[in-house]
Length: 404
Image 1: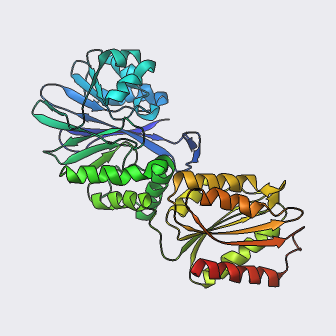
Image 2: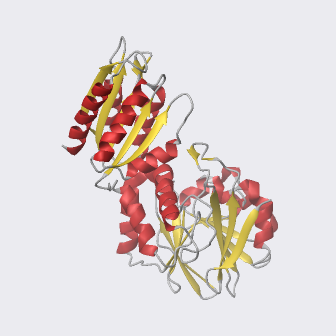
């Protein structure tokens, strides 16, 4: 059963939200057991109604059902496509079959991306950055916000109502019980799911977050309501969601937070990792620990989320076929791809006949401006190869590097 909601944001603006509990890996990459929503919006005016975005294709028939609750084919005048990614444009063709006279508006580049949607392409009209549209006394301004997170992403500003429709920007993972941030929510869950979304979906383009927020500020846009295409609609803590995005973009760390990621095939590195976790905790660090072993595969999406506000990252890798453990190479590469540079990194690596694992991780991370402040190597053949006193010695060295 598909769960969806239709509700007023204002007297004339409606949200149409569907709760996607089926997608387990967003973009086929990011683990999201918490699910995700797709939010479209419908503005009613005396001259005709305006739809902002749609839902993912698999929910298309349900979307039409929801749409019929607030408008009709003869009343739908425009469809604004803020972003061409299929989780927002997937139902576009079906909507145009239902309302064939509606005109499609979007970024000029979106028109070049509509080959998969022939009906939409035939009805498409590009809008310039800053272009205004007045319909039934409602004034809309379209603002290009490139690379948040595709080049054709844009927003719509409703000046009189002080509402900003933002598509992916200021969105979050999760299926909250409420539609709005001033209703019954678990704030810590919302903050976490928002950070996770920013890091995984927009993290690679993080420099554009600050640029586009500054662009909005320079235009004098100070919304009282932020209405994104995923997650909660913000009408109480607008500044808070903007600050979360700013913090992730700048990779702002907590002073006492450390991320510890390790892999252990036969227990040796895990023994060291637990010693490192204990030593860091004793020094007052909040330690987020993730381990790859023969029973566990931690979610990469969660590792990156904790990396985003960690002051230091500790990676403990065994040597696998004369190289770093494959999953930890992937973690290092994704840290470069999705999380800000400049963080301290300490690398601990066990070895048998080869000791190249640490240098391999170091090369990856230093290539994207992380600071590898310490490398610790130790010989290991089995779970008892590393003695307790050696764990303590290495842990002390790591702590000194972290605090230095």
